Length: 99
Image (cartoon, rainbow, N blue to C red; front, side):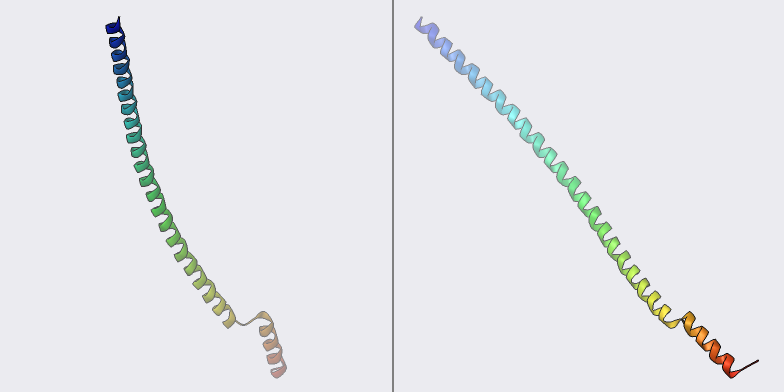
C-alpha cells in the first residue's frame, strides 16, 4: 500500500511536471508570436511615419510656393493702375485736350 501511495505521488509529480512543460511551451510560443507581431507593427508604423514626413515636406514646399506667388501677385497688383486713377487721368486729359 505504501508502495502504491509512493507510485501515485510519483505519477502526480510527473503529471504536474508535464503540465508545467506544456504551459511553458505555450507561453514561449505566445511570446514569440507577440514579438513577431510587435516587429511587424513597428515596421508598419515606421513606414507610415516616413510617408507622413514626406507629405509634410511636400506641404511645406507647396506652402512656400503659394506664399511666394501671393507676394508676387500683391507686388504686381500694386504696380497696376486702379480704375479710379485711370478715370481721373482721363478727365485731366479731357480738360487739357478739349474736342
